[in-house]
Length: 70
Image (tube, rainbow, N blue to C red; front, top):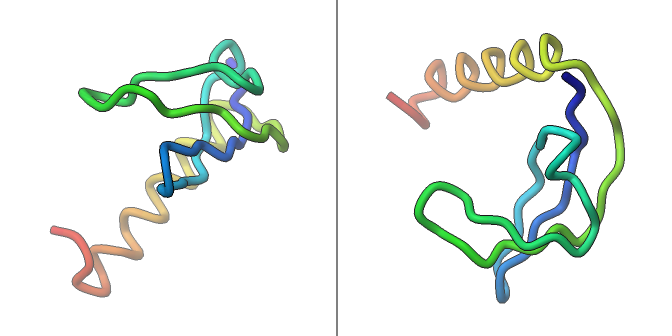
């Protein structure tokens, strides 16, 4: 499965995240966990699930190492 990097917006809040290709459609409204109303504003970059999960693990390790996450 491929993932795409997306800019999501909800009101004044925004976040950049990787989404499975089937959800990465500009203008699509998404529910993230228990928080709905996130709009896909921009889509770019494609990568494999394996690479995206590896990036996620490295990011998690980085945050834990700096005391930003337990």
